[in-house]
Image 1 (cartoon, helix red, strand yellow):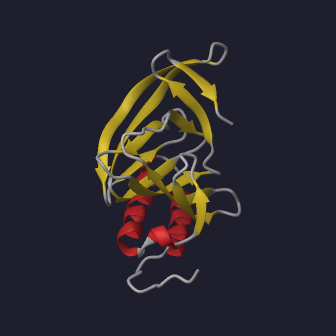
Image 2: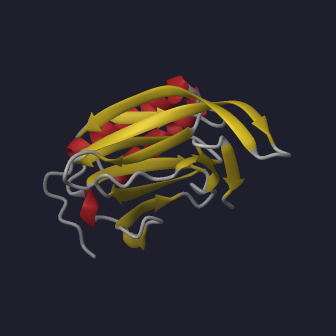
Image 3: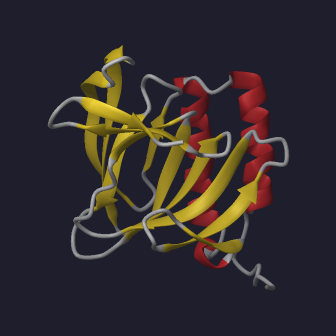
Length: 187
């Protein structure tokens, strides 16, 4: 697929180069991820129609998505994902860090920290770190475990579309049940 580059002043390739540079210089601490999120914002504003770039993929929520980049060394992947209104994802964690920027719609995202975990009984205590609504151009980051447990969904009547960068291959690690404080391994 040929992409019309009119209006693109900052490309996915530019973002990839910047993300790699930031990871080398600042790491994936909160500081480094906030800088990466700043460049995600720039990509949303200057990268053209990201929803037409990359390769089609099916997201775990059965909504279409796009893979914009997958690092050959497994450092990170970049995707366009959609979340449906009033259908929250399970409370889940990934093996690694992440950052996102809203392209369209509005998202509610809650992030927890794992404060206590019993692997034998598969129970966990979680503490809310943030619960916020984000809209076009706004960003959210989550750190490596134990501060990367989150749930997200579209707020309002329309789906939300985001660009997301996930460390590693982006795999989910656990899903958490808030009602009985249990969790299960996903992969």
